[in-house]
Image (cartoon, rainbow, N blue to C red):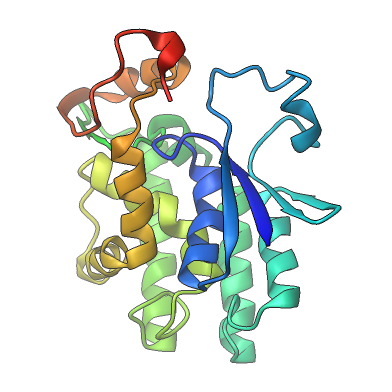
Length: 236
């Protein structure tokens, strides 16, 4: 059975991608959580992380790091990870790669937190451009391949790559157009996404660096997460 090393579900967009893909494809795996704030150089932890970062997929003696590499490794072993249709598959791979290597304003201004709700004081121009491109990309995929997912009627790897965007749209109260909004609703209702979301809200741990980044984004209108433990050393 695979082992997937992840960090906090509330914060870790990179961990979300392979996790939600494995869940959606019903591929069995063991989840191992290493919390932000833990010492990733600890001798008990460092051997699990070739680059000192999450996620990492372990398959016996094989270690695969980086979410895109993990997805391609899984695609070599399991059908359905990418769309079966060649045109849909090519589009899905291109869209996933664009997400993997771009949208820096989105990452900067909308740090992921599944459990909070934030109201922007003012939408940064660079973020608006990123969101405009994402909405156009989603509209293209939905129209070309028939939806309700980006490359057709099934959740595939391209949806996993945009799963963190879906949670960010919810957290930051962003208002995409009708097609993108329908896609967000579809994604939030998917069982794998709901499982991740429920896990994120149940976490009592907090990472101060992420919390500071979230508070600079705007005014919090809600925090839906479980209350943090009073003793930070016990957070888990």
